[in-house]
Amino acid sequence: MRTQSGNTARVVVIGAGMAGARLAARVPGVTVIGEEEHAPYNRVLLAEVLAGRYEPDVIALPPAEVRRGVRVVRIDRADRLVHCDDGSVIGYERLVLATGSNPVLPPLRGLGHILPDGVHPFRTLDDCLALRAAVRPGVRAVVIGGGLLGVSAARALAECGAQVVLAQQGEHLMERQLDAESAGLLRSHLEALGVEVHTECRVRGLRCTDGATPAVRAVELADGYELEAEITVLACGVRPRTGLAQAAGLDVRKGVVVDDELRTSDPYIHAVGDCAEHRGTVYGLAGAALEQADVLAAVLAGGSARYEGTRALTRLTLRSPAAVPVAAGVAGAPGGLDLAAFGDSRPMPGDDVIRLADATRGAYRTVVVRGDRLAGGVLFGDLAAVGTLARTWQDDEPLPADMSLLHLLTNDGGF
Image (cartoon, rainbow, N blue to C red; front, side, top):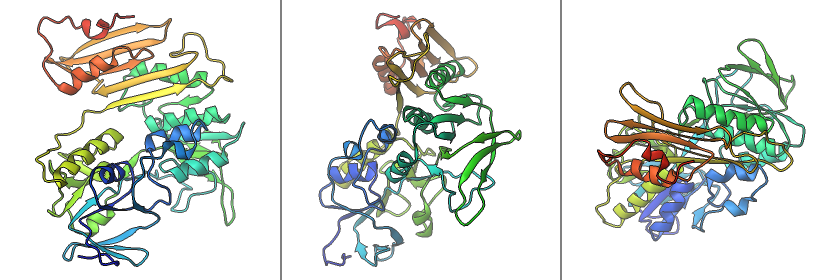
């Protein structure tokens, strides 16, 4: 088990994203192989780069030794070798798959394996920089997808002066995190920034120019309506990158299946981050990726750490550009919007729901109590109570029997 230079590689990590970089920072002597030419960076902040608020170097992660621009093409489990596209072969004692995820390309008419000019995924720093180079004041941009990524992209494009339309197939924005009322407040905030929001809107295809290099001209909806577009952003979710694992014969379902030590079906191979499936869940969240990397670092050091799953909090800050007038009564005006969501905010039969709203201040809070535990909640505009609520939820401890449920939302002094 030797690299080309003859050195033994104790741990090899495939992938230089947030999980791979975190592991490299925690485990000495790790060999990290990354496809991107960039040094590892904080993917959560890509929208800030797109908006021009940060330059790429600002979102760089702490330096890590990475073989950049190299793609692993095959894993030889029998001899514990990885084969790379530059011809190098690297041996390992332990291998870690941190291959992340790919953006989902929806099955749209006019969208093939080669994207038309003006059509952009929004997943990597290169995607972000290409989009930033294309956007200019007044350009017509359509964002397909109203999840966290689509909302962040639409806000950033609006800050760049683009005329933005956000097309969401579901009933409301950020369906995974928000209830209908908080999603409505989010929609109002985006519309105050100049974003045109369409929900329950199914995209059928793209209308592109003819020729050797087609360029997008419009987004076609299922009802026949067209949204004029010089730029189209695909924010339709992500899919775990499992190709290497499948080809190597590892157990793969939605993601690469791992146990509580983040170990795959091969005892010498682990997986962390967006590509990993733990107890039936693929998280696709930065917080989970970092937590998994920390647990795996302890495991590789010989500790008895176990990964029990992640109870993740989603935070979103949407600032209002000074040049854009914000309507009175819109959440977060004039400085912007703060939103936090955790757990399951959609109540089930028998759940208790506690909700407080202040239309004047644009503040909204709701929590769902299931049995004697906090199941989830949304805080919008006023995040004073988020720390207490998030800790209560993350600890998963029974609520005191004598506690007033209203106290959950007002123990910081209320509105």
